[in-house]
Length: 265
Ligand code: URA
Image 1 (tube, rainbow, N blue to C red):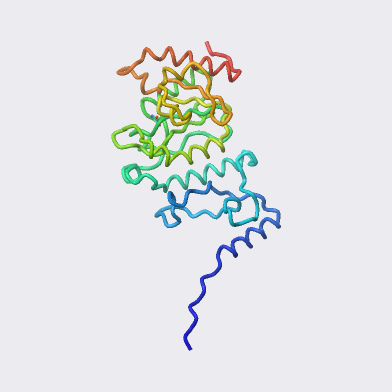
Image 2: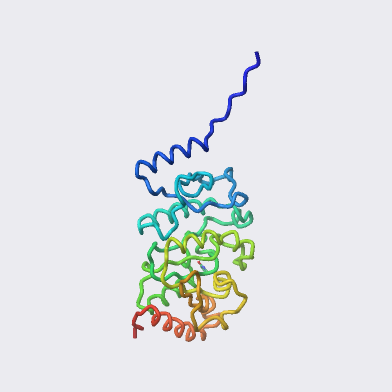
């Protein structure tokens, strides 16, 4: 008699049962990350962390996926950590994944009132794993201090999380691949204000082709969050256009007024 091939365990059913028992036991939330597009993050992606989501599997009717507004601050912090871990193994952009030293997720905490969005990590950021730590970052720190804030109290992030070789501008595909991460970061941080630094950040965030000169000086909207656009700190460096610092300060005063903060003397 020929032996029946062993059936693979019905993992999906087992998982659904397990999650249902957790739910019945009162577990409402598990750390997870946003479900990734299958093509973009195959389960077998080397180095990726396979996440089991209590909320994200459309075929598991255990509970609706916990959207960021339902999460506590602590849960949002945990979710950001899970997402950072997932981003660290990302290979959606094969070129960037093969040339980066490491991914540069963000600097700051969930609940920050203000989020600065830059373009992409440069050499210093790639080496240190933190955004805006090079020359442009030093200038950004001065801008933040001039606004009466501390760097630790703002959230700093880039449109893409890997350094493009030679610091070239991220292309549309790269920005698109990283978009889901940025979207989730902003959902979890939930800033009350966003400041887009430079044309690349502004254009991707606001889905526009307009240059900074046309976008600055007024507020735009990202998912109900007021967005101020200003020049990128790298553009203000001595060898470029330091005279634009005046415009940036005007923009910052506008932002402070909208935030209800005093303008430091
Ligand atoms: N420029 C950016 O846009 N981001 C950084 O993190 C550093 C420089």
